[in-house]
Length: 235
Image (cartoon, rainbow, N blue to C red; front, side, top):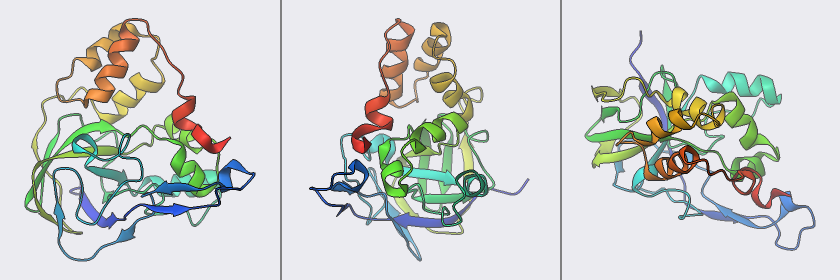
């Protein structure tokens, strides 16, 4: 099996798009950092983000638990066919690292990787929101991402340092081999009624706190709607 490798690194600062007076919700003003550009050479991976990167909504994006967003390049052929969009390619989801030779089935919560000079750790799968839908004008895109479980995942940065395209992801530690990102997605989106399973995943120490909180509530029988996250102001 080929070693997982960074194909491209992308960063971008938040920008405002749209018209605040537009009648169509999909045309209204919004601020986002989802549109990123490829960078060349070494880039610093800091505790909360890559150098030059930023988020339009710091409450729900970025920070220690979501410092670096990773997405598998292999998924894009699927999306191009499903969405009938040839322009839906690397960077479409606002990822920081576009990676080859790894998917959600290959990485686990707590996996620790050496990338260049930096040490990173898998913190959680991405929970898609309404912003990719707004960018691509596909209202239910977040729902499709969840359904297909092609979410990508986040790294927290344990040791700051430089990385660059072409660096391999060298696995250093795997404390939870049973909790792949794919399995976590299955629990979150397909096994919502299994309170015992939710409790088991919530107890994983290296899972990001927001996931732990959601799953702990579910284990207690408390449920909530995802509509605000996946549809938001797009209707």
